[in-house]
Amino acid sequence: MKYSAALALVLAFGLYGQESTGSAPAPAPKPQYPQGTVEHIKVHGKSLEGNLDGDSADRDVLIYLPPSYKKQTKRHYPVVYFLHGYGINAQRYWDMMKVPETADKDIASGASKEMILVHPDAFTLYNGSMYSVSPTTGDWETFIAEDLVKYVDSHYRTIPNRMSRGLAGHSMGGYGTIRIGMKRPDVFSSLYVMSACCLTASLTPGGRGGAALEKLKSPAEAKSGGGRGGVVLLAEAAAWSPDPKNPPFFVDLPTKDGQPVSDVVTRWAANAPLAMLDQYVPNLKKMHAIGMEVGLQDTLAASNKLLNETLTLFGVDHTFETYEGNHTNRVPERFEQKLLPFFTNNLTFTSAKR
Image 1 (cartoon, rainbow, N blue to C red):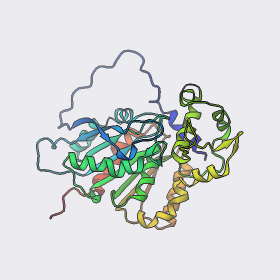
Image 2: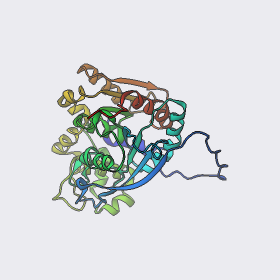
Image 3: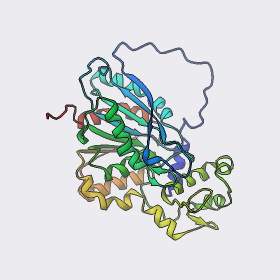
Image 4: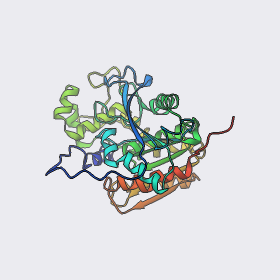
């Protein structure tokens, strides 16, 4: 599957460009169980400084603190980091999944233990960072695994060890989860991958969209007239084939005159988890738990099933679940019924004695 085709699925997400219709619904009654608190903060990413796209190194981050956090001031908590998908920001995912309400409900019912939830915003010039390493977009791997974790551990009462840290994400965020997770078992012990995009290496990235993109003259033109497909291609190129000496986009495109450019295609393919996974099998085997899922009607189902088969082939312990649903329509439900219980069952909730 082509990278661009995979990411274009996310652009069909009902949240992208969604507008409400009709009169506003009546406010829902206030729940009777304890509620956590939400903080909207900014975290500076030293690893994102000087990126050639000009995106801010100060990133918006949403934090959920469980109901007991403000009262039990000596208690420490595990942390789950959630990476959002392409095309919309962390706030839109947060709202769609109703994160605080869902977490409160799961805690009250006993389906989830109390934990801190951290949702960083990776919306960039071209609508998504791909959570990759690039001078054009910045070093997002290091931002997530080091800058952000260090900030959260120093500003909140966390349990600051890998056994109490989980990493999860959907679509582009699922890609980021497996990409970062396989490299950083020193930071995270449990991974939950939801409908990951961009798992397979394509030998023809770009397709017809690449020829149209070659004619664009500026980032502003790409945003206004390149179409969603063109913006997706630029996001991928910025992440996987950056070129500091090639303004104004500072990327090498995967096509020239509409035909694939072999060395650029090779660079893109090298960023596909299924192309690099065998190098990181020892790291993956250090994980305490890996969970994966995908909808049967998701066009990414085949690549996610292949990831499952490859992990099995290499003897990496993990779980894999399919369900009736497409790429987006069950995400809030799966967050509530699967993701939060997964981390409840696999993270360590007590600090090690010193």
